[in-house]
Image (tube, rainbow, N blue to C red):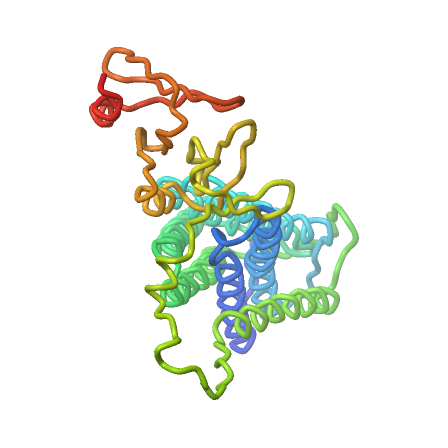
Length: 371
């Protein structure tokens, strides 16, 4: 078996790194402040971020492949090339759904990073399977090193980017994501040999490097557009217009005074509309992943607050945390049942489910009810 001599175009190597970093920044920034968005807005943001991250993985790979120089002409199977892009986007979207529609625990963040690593690896090897007139021969060491690089760097990227959703963490996460995508490709290529194949063995229509270059340019254009969008709407702060203040100092309310005089309302969503509920009307707040559900008499609403935020805001309104996933309003409490070392709270009104009381909160509820 005669292996072909292979070299890389340094300019296209650098371009592939830039694309990976731009895609990482755009995708991770698009999913920032998701708790302040409606369900529909979150779905759109996740779809756009999946295209940015998954498309960035694909574009980085094929920009680097355009820079791969061999002494023979070689082509790509268009069906396999398209499949590699779809796999990357779908797997990345699964990771983002886990992060933004379930409770974001350390296990979930690690699992999301592992999913993205799997997407990078799957995209790379499916894309390589589409080569025509040459064949990739892999070495066990190269495959193992690529797997280790993908999982280590992707998990690190998501731990950093989602540890705290700040500009600094997103930038550091972007660097890790870009390093993961680029490292997997070039580590895998370094451990790969290529041999000439005398005939086509295509699954779909064959593409030349020129046709592939057009597809990569179009994809990169979309990714850079997303980058410019998030950069201008998020990173670039617009200064507030300077207006002459003619109000006497005594008439200006301080932020603290405004915060204490405005009534507390619970932001909820129902049928695509935002509602702001009076805490007095709410019987239960139940954790649901990274968000909560709010129960009133005869109705259930989706709330953008996580349970930690709801606890912090509603404790002063008389709500009690009786379980790690439940807050209750004692005004609506109708009955309490003791069940060994736990309990059950039942409420007046229709369609309000019973709430479990954990062992650690049992005494608090019993003292409140004098039972």
